Each structure stands twice: as structure tokens, then as C-alpha cells.
Length: 271
Ligand SMILES: C[S@@+](CC[C@H](N)C(=O)[O-])C[C@H]1O[C@@H](n2cnc3c(N)ncnc32)[C@H](O)[C@@H]1O
Image (tube, rainbow, N blue to C red; front, side, top):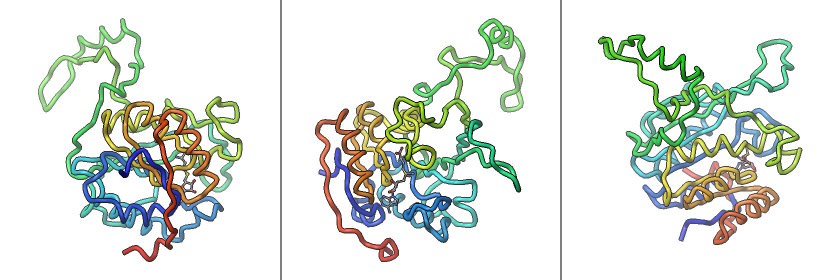
């Protein structure tokens, strides 16, 4: 059974071996091609991402979701449209990132590209609503202000559960060295992501019992929260030390978790 399992090996090779139309949600926080980590030294990140998109589109179920992490230019000048539909770019804004830029503007956001295989079959808005910014009394006053919907005036409606988070997320902070969930200082910034960020992605685009796949596990944040939320999980990580960290972390919430080793093949060999 290919679930509740994390694999030590190359996710490129492993994904190519998975059955077609198999996965509900993929969270891919892999190379950005900006650091000096050996796994991040990708000379043509756009071509690399195109290859990933093609591989992931085969294994996603129709209506399934891919969240692909990267920098602003991660999918520039590539044609992903035969494989997946790009719904929006989520800007994960991190205002606290050190403002060290001298020659240009400091880069203080990451992009999470929100793709689906055709029309999405799950977007659970009510599970990810965020508080309205305006106070209740002001909100009620606003409800008397007409808004324009499809060219016609109607009443402004506020949902008591909160509003759609939109596609610029400034409400989720990057971890700091003081964060309780941080596993090791060396994993700050480039590796470990906040649980709150992964929770929003998992809740929005999967349901209990669905299969969530993370091909670039790192510390296993996405699958830890996915398992806590009752999803089935599958992951891959090429670095043995990281795999062990992820295993220990996810096993705490998913006692049935197993691990396996797949022979590493260079990704260029996968057509
Ligand atoms: C940015 S980190 C993921 C961080 C993770 N989201 C977390 O919260 O801890 C990317 C991870 O992908 C792994 N990786 C890079 N290329 C890989 C590949 N081809 N196959 C499997 N793992 C890979 C790296 O070793 C690294 O641990």
C-alpha cells in the first residue's frame, strides 16, 4: 500500500513510479534555486519545475491540487497549460524578513503556485476563513452600503465565520529561533515551514481520508499536519538525516507510519 509511508530517495524517480490519478493533494516545497545547498543547485529552475508539473499532473486525480513553492520567477516562460491549470499565485508575505537588500528591493515574499488538474473538486473555504479586519459594528454599518455584483447593486454580505484569506498571506509568520515548533536553528528560513501555513493548504484542498503527497519532505511539516487532520499521507526525501527527522516527527501523530528506501537515480534519466 502506497500510503502512510515516507520514502528515502529521489521524488522524481518515485513520482514517476506512482499510479496514475492516485493523489488528491500534492504540496511541493522543493528547490528554489537560491541557496548553496547541493539539492537547491538547479541551473534552470523553470525547466525543473515544468518537469515536476508534468510528473505531478499524471499522478493527481482529476480535480486534485498541486501547491508548488518557489520564488516570483519559478514558472516564467514555461508552458504548463497542457498539464495543470494555474488558479492563482499565493503570495506568502514575510514582512519580518531581514531587510538586507542594497542594490534592489529586499525579497520578502515566497510564492505558492496553486494548480489544479482541471476544475478543483475540493476548495473548503469555510475551513480556512480568517477574521474580518473591521469590527462588528462597523461591519453591520457596511452591510447597508450597496455593492455591485455582476453590474447590479446588492447588499454587502459579511460571513460570520470570517472572510476568504485572499491570495496575499501576511497573517502567517515565518518561524523564528524562538518558535516552539522549530526543530533546529539550522533549519530556519530555507527549510522548516510553519505548521499554520501547511494547515491552511491541507484544509483548503483535501478532506479526511484523502491522500496527501509531499515529494520534498524536509522536516515533514505538511504530512504531520495532514495526519493530524485525518488525511492519508505519502512522502519522499532524498537526505537521510532529514528523512529521520521527518519520520520521528510524523510518527508521533501517525503510529502506522513506515519508511522505505528507493534507489536514487539522477532526475535527468526520467523522461
Ligand atoms: C525546502 S525543504 C522542505 C521543507 C519542508 N516543507 C518543511 O517544512 O520542513 C526541501 C527538501 O527537499 C529535499 N529534496 C530536494 N530535492 C529532492 C529530490 N529530488 N527528492 C527528494 N527530496 C528532495 C531536500 O533534501 C530538502 O529537505
